[in-house]
Length: 482
Image (cartoon, rainbow, N blue to C red; front, side, top):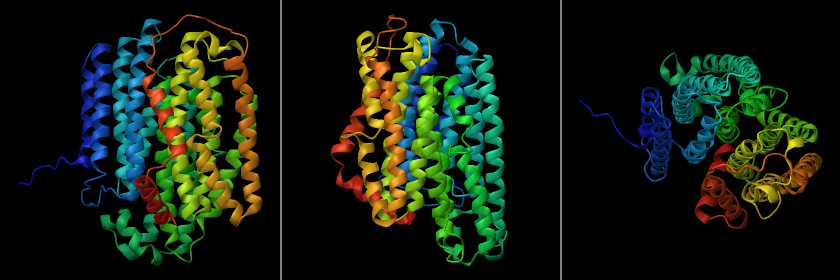
């Protein structure tokens, strides 16, 4: 009898799955919060081991140069967010927003979400990937509504309805892709294995491939948060616990993006199929310009950064839609920097909302004076996410703009306009939040600043110096994306 292999691929699924089962049964916040952090750390270690030793691809699971980027990023941000969550949720207990019963649910769902996102990333079977994204959606729906207020439940239902529509469209697109593959690959499980499909996609019916990609772009694009399918995202960020906002912006959007990139690569191998790039470029630009304008009208601090996520996912979709080695490299770098930066911003915003007792920006001011660490943390985060030097997002946006200008100058102008509009909105809001007249509560709150500043350190280093190994890694993936 063959032993069940405990390699890195198995462990990134097994650790969060077992931890979720344990967290459902264990009582007491002190124990469950520590177990949540420990499980997230062990999952990160298992993911890092895949950099040196990758198991052979099977029909259900695989690790390759593309998804290893997402896996390492997913587990790292998952770990740092769990550490932030420990102090954040402790305060929520003190003020009575969460009960012991909901705490068991929260930590168990956190690990279940990590399992589902990892499953979607390592799935070689397109149906299994869809299942991972679907269950991750359902889990985050439950977590968004955990406070059980009217607003939270409304946001959860809105997320559920729009997410369900999107995931249904993605399912229909997956079925169409299977129908395109069946005449060539047969009715066996190989007809759903991405590694097998990539070798045969050139002979698929281009008409079915085209139709499948339209449904997949709309379906998974809803989960990416691209306009006009973005409606669930601002409410989910504003009403759910802030650690879930960090996971949504920093991780779950990337999981859906990963699925979209897989299908884009399939179409690229078929010379008769439509080019997916222009569709992604169009949706990316619409998302960028729409979100940049909407930033000026936000009154809730978490909603503002939710629209910032829509903006940046638009930039990332634009980059991958443009394609080519440089634009794809910029897209990978931007995705990585956005995940690290946006999650760190939510770490800061979560504690700011706790100390001020509100998310309304009109009731928050002078943070650098009243709460200097949180205030300056927000300043650093906004400077980074706005694309100012010397942070990593400046580098990725610079690479993307120069690459686009060399090929499509008009698109480059539109891209720059969107980026500048968003920059102006964020700096305008930051001026009052950080440097305006002090407003709101002055009460301090216990907070863990290590996750936030560790992220800021990474994005600062990336803006100044990228290790040769990381550059080579991203260049290789950029070539695969075409």
